[in-house]
Amino acid sequence: MRNRQHSRENCSCQDDMEPTNAIQFPQLNQPSPDFNALTTDGMKSLADYKGKWLVLFSHPADFTPVCTTEFIAFANKAEDFRARNCELLGLSIDSVHSHIAWMRNIKENFGVEITFPIIADLSMQVAKSYGMIQPGASDTSAVRATFIIDPEGILRAMVYYPMSNGRSVDEFLRLLDALQTSDGNKVATPENWKVGEQVIVPSPRTAAEAEIRADEGYEYKDWYFSKKSL
Image (cartoon, rainbow, N blue to C red; front, side, top):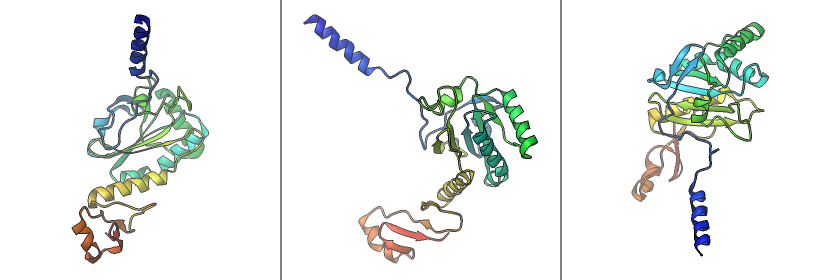
């Protein structure tokens, strides 16, 4: 009896233990994990981007073809991001020297200059804190993860892509426009919304508000679904 009880106690303790290989993920609408990391532009921390939006994105490795197409696309749209008060920051589990050599290679072979810094995350500290390391996809490389962080350091969006497929940089510009529009106007945006299109008005919160929604001047479909132009 004593042995069986001891066995049950051991089992309970083991069940309560967290798995050692658990992936750590940041949480939406919570402060983004802080970092102080070496980049191709020197040391950078999350605090350096206070007051600006930030697109932090990881890639599996330097000198790889899919990553090269993504970096060219981000570089070609860098001014569009800056026009939205947004900076770009790349990351991979490679050294600064590897990053610099790859940046020079892209300029020489494709005529595109990479104007944003790239984190050299050899310790994988930043990658792990953002859930960029995905066992089953890669244990030593960061997958294609993208994070949009607002001027207060709050994580507002995160998107993960498989190793084999490149991201759409235009989608991150579109999403950034949508987030900034929602923040500035207290509205939501529909599927594939673009600047200039109608936005969704917040749904009524009470039965009384729902009763008068049709008469409030919006493009009205039903009490819960109305649009307006900005």
